[in-house]
Length: 235
Image 1 (cartoon, one colour):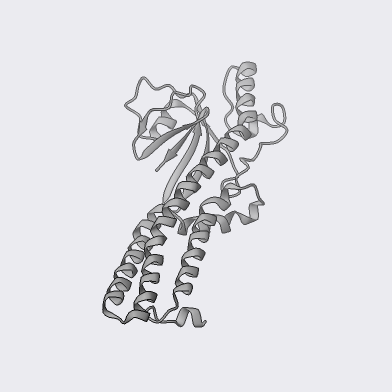
Image 2: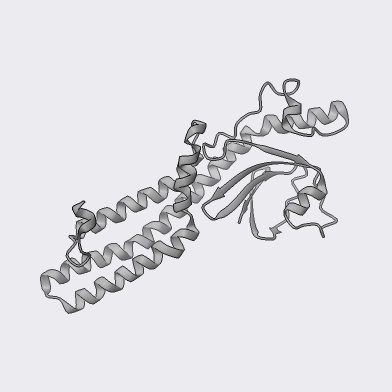
């Protein structure tokens, strides 16, 4: 308990550096843990962790706090004696290092996320093949994924992502376009969609597959990144 009761002014620099390191690791774990394969009962835990590592949360709270602390330690460094000035400058460096470390962690986690969803897309290939086979046999698309079992799939595969384990499916161009506010795009044809809901904190991202692969460059409220035959929609 002594760590948390320490006054910022008298806190040893190593304690602040330790706190910066712990927070940085927690952010990386929160951003990436749910992208690993794992048991479903862990889903709630990893989704909870991801809420606090959301870039929106970090920008709203942790970045301003680090800047305020940097100003506080800068003032102490100017006003205090040589010994305390050294301590204050070390804590100032820790405060300024934290935003830089967060930027590096978020940049690294972006690439981890990209790779994880590329893997999830490959896990969805049997579903895509089954839907196309169903259409070839029956002349219509299935109403839901359960229609594919057991004739076309032994079981519906998992995404392989602990936080987002399930694929979702729907058909109908108007229904799909309405979801993305694309009703005015008469040129856009979408017969069906395979999707993973993948929220991050306050952002409700989606990972989608359209058989036409005609993803718009921009979708209202989303940034669109192609990942293989799929598209990741960043809210």
